[in-house]
Image 1 (cartoon, rainbow, N blue to C red):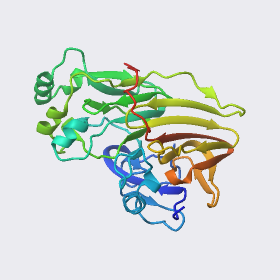
Image 2: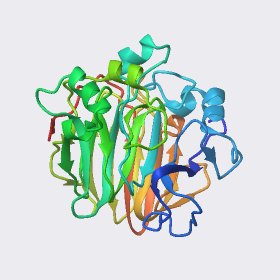
Image 3: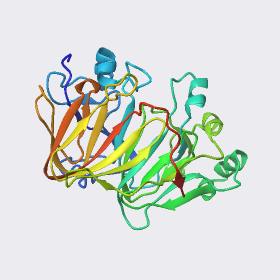
Image 4: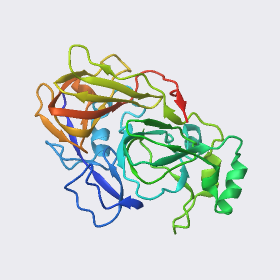
Length: 333
């Protein structure tokens, strides 16, 4: 192995006008002087905080190590494929849209931005808006934006802890207040803001309206019941399997072994985020890495096998790039 190991990431806290100064449910020791909307964990500029690569960004490490880090399933061998982050909406986000791959390529970008949201917590009444109401056309949305009533044309749905929501590129969407989400997405920060409740921020109506799809496959993901891991007291639930990412959730009460497939075209970097609890990542020839709530650990594709040892109990999300072509997930509103 070329000096790669399990990388403990340093969260990058991103101020947003819709965020909060209270991150204590996830980061009890982080004191905020301004409203934080997002905690980026695996963005291009996010930095490693352990071992010889401490202080280097994922962009730098991806460019240096290529497929040893990202794996054969990643589309670009020299760019980290997935961006994971915590979202802390305390007020409504802007009504926005991200381009799909086709739209992104037409504007000179390598790919679009399809994402999903795992609901870590949600207060009673918490909602998100996802897509246009049946029969609403792009021209209707444009008129409603100018008339300052864009919210009326969106599908508002209530959300509950443990749900996974798929947001395909081209979906008009926004978040209401009162939840904490983990977002998994293509590594892109292209957002077209369509409507912002009068906040003094730039809108992107030309590009945004061109990116809007009137019909999308977005919605709450329909998934099978959680299953126990054979021979253990651990539980696994596949939250989503989609064209760009697979996300599973594990509740570990005893050590769990993980294998990274080594068949050509199927191995992928593994990203783990601790939703609750504490655990230790172990692999042969590497220093153990302790992770607690809010932490992300990136396990390079070249590691092949690793183990997570819970300290009492730990709940983790594990995301990776699928090594085969997958359809969009089955969803419901």
